[in-house]
Image (cartoon, rainbow, N blue to C red; front, top):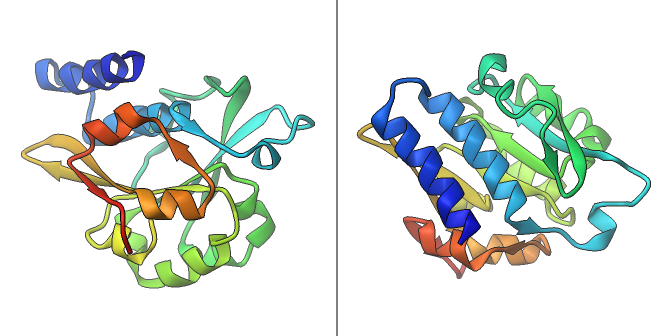
Length: 180
């Protein structure tokens, strides 16, 4: 119920006010997606007090990311790592694999298969904003229709990553793909 209220507040805030732009809404959604995802214990080692959000590409401006800077997820302080492109992210595999969440900008669609191949054994929540993102192996994809931010989920990809998405999150998705 808390998830439904959180996401509803994000959506209604945008619908009633111009105070949030699309990028800020996506950042707020990403924060909530992370809050309502369960990682396996080895993906969140007790020796680390940081929760990493990797941002690949430049579609999430720093101003939008400031909305969640310093927030906590799973009792860890949220920090961001920026990768200018998929190519740059692939050149830093250890940095990328340390992330619990990786957001991929729409501008980075060309090398996604390599990115997913690198992350296939890691418990990383992958979030994108490009048509076909789920078909390539992404877990959550944003869909913007008439300035409304919606999302779709590939639950089979989440299972492969050993992630458990809250059932309320699945109910709120516009589409849930559960088979490859």
